[in-house]
Length: 380
Ligand code: SF4
Image (cartoon, rainbow, N blue to C red):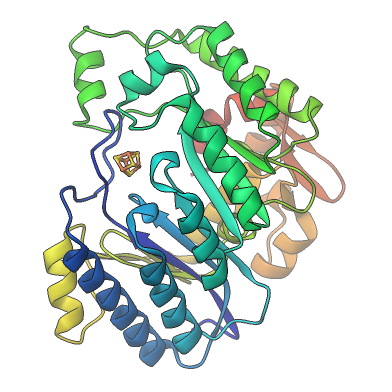
């Protein structure tokens, strides 16, 4: 059972239209009645969690999607009222929301600030019209600038954008331009994700059938290095494989995940972690709503990890961050010295230049960041 505090993730499983690369669960063609009903169900799920866990405070709140900016500000406010009622937070905690540039108007941004949101991330993905079209995004490049300006004017404390690199037809120069435009927006946070094509997504099928081609792996690695150099040069420090922030603007909610902190996930398909269990809600809106209405916490899967699995997961999550893992914390929390536990594997990873071992911390090297999947496969 967690003590004191818990992070709260709230999923908003609705999209205006499906993007071509995305395989996340979400529902299109929604009505305002469905959105209202969904928000009440999400608040009811919070109540069920509060009954199960007892008194806890929210340490951070993250409203993700889907497309949370499809919710009217009053509904965002209702979700945060739910958090205040069932997990009353200390004042000033981080409250984040994801938004799509085309659905985040000035008034929407102003009102969500009043409701308590202090961090917004816009799903930009690229500034290149050809890329936006290919990825199936609904906004144009000019709407990004308007949205970022409106977020600043609304008084959002941290404004960030997500970018995607490595899409079919994208050249290194296109990516450089995206990075430069991102920096020119003067945002506090930029996430850069290599395109991952979810199974069954239209783009995945087109790539699998040879209609479209992804850039070469070496080009994708070069793109990642371009992000590391250009963003660091602009003062946005890399603090995790895909995340860069100005000082004081890192996502505390995500850092909590990478420290293997506990959290509850509200909504269909949302994941929760209450050590030693990882749980997932059903990825289906109507079964999710039915289960909550019948007064039970919805559950599709529940996986209990043993001590060694938890420790290995802790190492992998920690190594995602540039601070890496602390040897002292490992001894205290797990009673294990990572060097002794990993033995020759650690020596091999150091010898090939993927890990660096200091007296206090173990981290990925720059080469290790580029090949992190390879390192993590070894550590599982
Ligand atoms: S990428 Fe985001 S906006 Fe696009 S379909 Fe997936 S969840 Fe919806």
